[in-house]
Length: 462
Image (cartoon, rainbow, N blue to C red):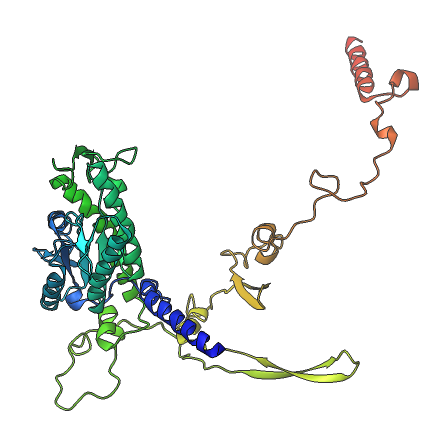
């Protein structure tokens, strides 16, 4: 009896997860870019899909992207009058044929100027704008369009609707934007919000605003829905900002050759791609620096020392266990392979008869059981300089304080001396003023000078 209730629940959960699965296509755990890093011919074919709004956006995009060789935009947009039009199903069939011919990698969608209309459901009943049934139909049709594009591995950017002049129409626009933002995210596409870019300081409709250069211009047409030429350029600016960011990310992914066949790897680094086997009989000779006899860049000189292979050793240590028994523990001494370039760098000579001074080795332990080894080179001529013996670099105060983080012991009685208890003060007599020479009968140096000068004057008079 209980199994009959569990099976329907499991089936329902599986259906929910299957429906939500496309929403995570945008967040690839592998860190892949939103658009493909390897477009045919290293250029991205872009198509504009939508109604009259998309046609105006296409004009602004053609001007902004005309100097970018990475992007080629189709000069005519693929027309879909809206999601809620009666010919939507026929438009989808024609759109699929156009996509096969154009083979785009990027699609930019914008529509909604003609979507504020009622539709009829499967029973023939008219569904009014803004009702729950209308919202469900609007979401279902947007899903159909997005799935058609994602089936062809096209990166989709859906441009949201800006504010419109009529208050009642603006409420419907915000409703459509809210539905589109949700469906775009769940289908692994990107939503470009332009609502705030064409609103005034209070969030309402404004015909004027800053253009792409920052000057205040007329951005909206007289009907309160469409855009002027400057407005379409600003609208394309939002698309350009998002698209260029993803193209840059895709280019960065090209420089990390973790995946891809030989042809894709050759686009990243042609020098690193090598034949996996001998050339086929009758194949044309390779062209390039090797065939023409051009000199290859020389590798680092190793003075006859090549790569050193890994050489792991073992040592035996005698320890006393917790039970008091003497045991022998075997430890592995790991020595990794050392490339010839590293050996050449370490063993290089400043002159033919004198090796370079590598300096003093400094070893330090860091968290995680790792050991850091470095060297501090002596200053030039330090070894030959005579006189007082200089401290080694690892014992210099600046190195101990700034690099090793040690705290040097302060001098006794100095301001930074925080030792406790404090040392005993000097005797009280040290703070007393000097005794009066008249009372003590002592003779000061000044008195002796005066007596000498007086005696000399007497002798001169005689």
